[in-house]
Length: 213
View (cartoon, rainbow, N blue to C red):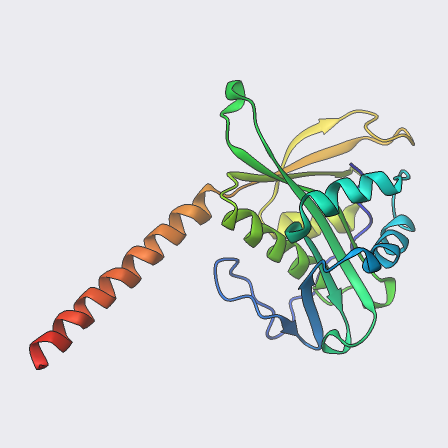
């Protein structure tokens, strides 16, 4: 899939960095919400279409968005009361048994309005998409982006993605692509450790309360 251009995010005060931590719904006046219904489709296709390296039909958008609506995340300014300023669209598939048989999250499209770039919105959309993939028990997240798209490469690599392979003449315009990959297994392990510590702490607290009664 094509990845629209994305600018390198600036590290702003208050921008969260821990995907497993609490991800606020509103950051610096920008609200992050899941896809709601078909009325949002025209704005989504218009925003993504202007940045694509190759065109998509409405059927491609519907395949992704209606198939995995929880993995289509939108950003709105004015704390959700303004216009759409960003969108990320993803899906989940299951790898073949020969390739491990695990679930894999795929980031198909990401874009941010030109005037709202360099504010970390793209990174925050991807962080929230990855969080959803972790909740769906995905073992990894992958995507493709043009080798010349420095903004997108910086954005994803800052989030921990690595270059898995180079795909020659991947796009219709003849451009090569990098396939980027992020292992989500460490996040699952860290979450299990966190849950264990929380349960252990609750157990100790319960014992203390029991002794006091």
